[in-house]
Structures are given as C-alpha cells and as structure tokens.
Image (cartoon, rainbow, N blue to C red; front, side, top):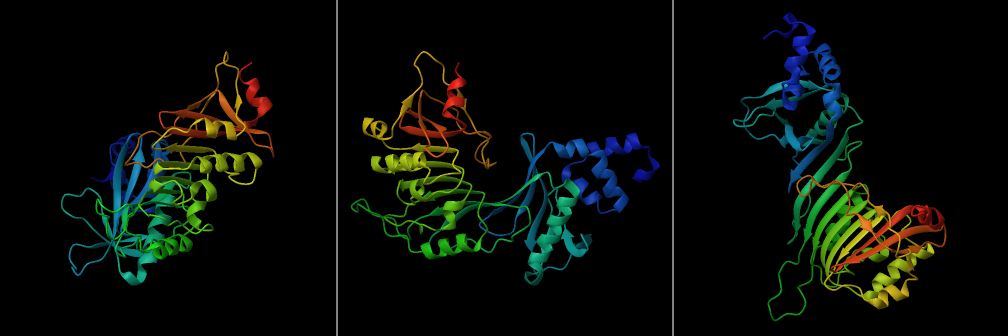
Length: 371
C-alpha cells in the first residue's frame, strides 16, 4: 500500500487503526512520515498514561505503552545472540541499530552488543521522547528481584527523565526451621546498599523483607525514595518510621512497638523530620491502643460535624498490581498539628490499620472546611 496515493482523511483513518508498535515502525519511513504520524495522532498520544521499561530479573526490558486501562508492547531491547539472520537495520536518532521480528510477537526486537549497550538504550529512549513527547510519563520498572544467595540486580541504564521503580525481595539464604525463633541472617545487605548508593533516588520501592534484626544504614538512599511499599517482619527493620524522607509509605508488618508510632508522630509534630511526607499507611498485627492516642497530643473535630476526606494520587501506581491510582481515602475526626507551620495531619485507625495524611492547610483553614 502506498499511502501517498490517498487523501489526508484516509491517511489519518489508516493510522488511527494501527497499533503503537506499527506506528513506531512506520515512523522510520521518512522524516515527513514521522511528522505526519505525530500530528495526526496527537490526541491519541495524549491518552497515554505512561511508557514503561519493564524488566524481570534482567536489564533487558519490554517497552510498554499504557493507555486507558490496557497496555501494549512496542519494542523489546535485548542483548544480541550468536545468530546473524533475520535482522534489519534502522537509523534511530542517528545510530544504526539492528532489529528483527520473532514469530508470535507483534512488536520488533532491538539488539545491542555489550560494548554499545548504554548507547543503544540512550538512542532508543531519545527517539521515544521525540516521537511520543516529553509530557508523557516514563518509568523503568525492575520487577521481582530476589536478593538471595548473592543474586542481585544487574546494572540498569540511567536514562534522562526515566525514574527507577524497583520491586525486590530480601530473604535470608536459609529459612528457619519451626524450632527457631529467629530467621537466619540476611548476608547480602552490602550489595543492596551498594545498589541504592550507586543509583539515583528511586521513585518507588516495593519490597518484601525478612531481615531479622538488620536494617539499612540511617543515611541510606533507600529512605530517600519518593514512595515505599514494604511487607516486613518487623516495623523497625528497615526503620522507615525514623529515617524516611519521601512522600508516601505503606507498611505491612507483624511486629511493632507503640513507642515507635508515638516517636514518629511527635517528630512530625515538632517539625524535626518527615517534612515531605504526605501519606502513611501501616497494617499491623494489633490495633494501636489508648497509650498511643494519649501520647501524641491528639485533637478532635466536633462529633456533630462531618470531617473532610483526604486522598492523594499515588506517586507510582504499579501497573501489574493495582488499577487504583489514588491512596486510600482518610476521613477522621482525629488530627494533630505541626508546631513549625500549624499544618494539620489526619489520623485514622480501623481494623488493625493506621493512616496518617498531611493536609496542605493550617489548623484554622482545616477547621473552616467544616463550617
């Protein structure tokens, strides 16, 4: 089919019925074709929620376009094998890169040699930025890394405007028997710390932890992540309630100390820590009791008034885990006030769960919402 033979309306209709990987490949025909695709598909590209580099235990990602409630693969980037057949070359942002198709896949495979791996990723990403635009959200999603017996995350390319989101498991090399009260110690904390120290601050960390008495260094970049979701055996390992510097945290734990919860709230109230925090949720084995509520200087909204509801867009909504783009709503008569700027944080406790949400309002502004 020669598109140039058809009028603009027909061109656009044809493009509207092509998937993203087809549009991506068609854009290499000429500069004019690429320009026409971008212009005619402008509204369609605006519906893209995000473009995700998704890899599973490797640094060889599938690149997915997430739009509406579906996802679509547009390319995979892998290390080139020994085979030499079936490749075709494309000029990608000024670099010649080998591509091929694999039977059963509707998207092309880009290949790289280890010596030019970083360049291949960089040039492909620059092309995607130019094609889809830099207003689209880009993320690198590293999935399901099990840090056990020295197996660790491989080197992940650092691309401009692509924050890193990591899902990992930290387990001991040997699980305890039913007669042991504590698990065998996790032996690879230095590898984990090295990963965080050598990476830019992560956008999101999703983690399952069984560390015994170990925790991250207090100055670890782990605590600087914008968002942390963690399932762990103890609340103090890692000690998020003392060192977290990000915006959102969700913690599921078996053990916790009431003193840790009290310390967390009082440090927030004093302005000593957690200046960026907006949302915290803790799921625990038992519900916090009156000792916690009595020790944090709790204030109450008049029982006759309906408290406002606080909700935040998630820093990162893991596509494969949830289709809920927002945090749980917090609606509570209980609140505390920060001394340094008079800001309010609502506290809600229900069914062994505690929520802590920070309003962008002073106490006076907060109370006027219910007048």
